[in-house]
Image (cartoon, rainbow, N blue to C red):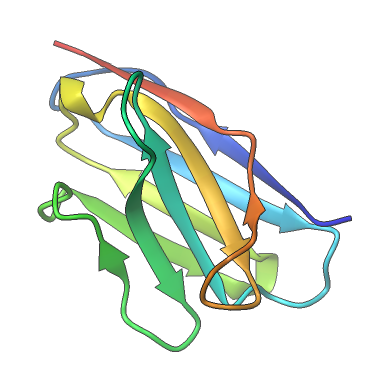
Length: 116
C-alpha cells in the first residue's frame, strides 16, 4: 500500500523559514511527479510547488521566489524549503505524488502556522 508521510512544519515567526519533507513508502518505483499543495481555513486547496523527474519545478504565483522544491529520487522523497514566511502562508500543507502528471496519492497534511 502506497503512503505519503509528511514531516516538518509547526509554528514559525513571520520572516522565518521551515522545511517540509514527504516520503513515499510502499513502492519500489520513484514517483514521476511529487509536489505540495496547501489549504487555509475557508479557502480552496492550491498548488504550492510541483516537480517531475523530467521537468523544471513549477510554483504557485504567490511563492515569488520564497520557496524551493527539491527531490531525492533514491528515497522517493520531496522537500519544500520555505523562506521569508508570511502569516498568509498559514495552512495545512499536503504532499502529493504519483506515477503520472496528475499524481494520485496524498499525505495526511502538516500544519504550518506563521505568526506575525
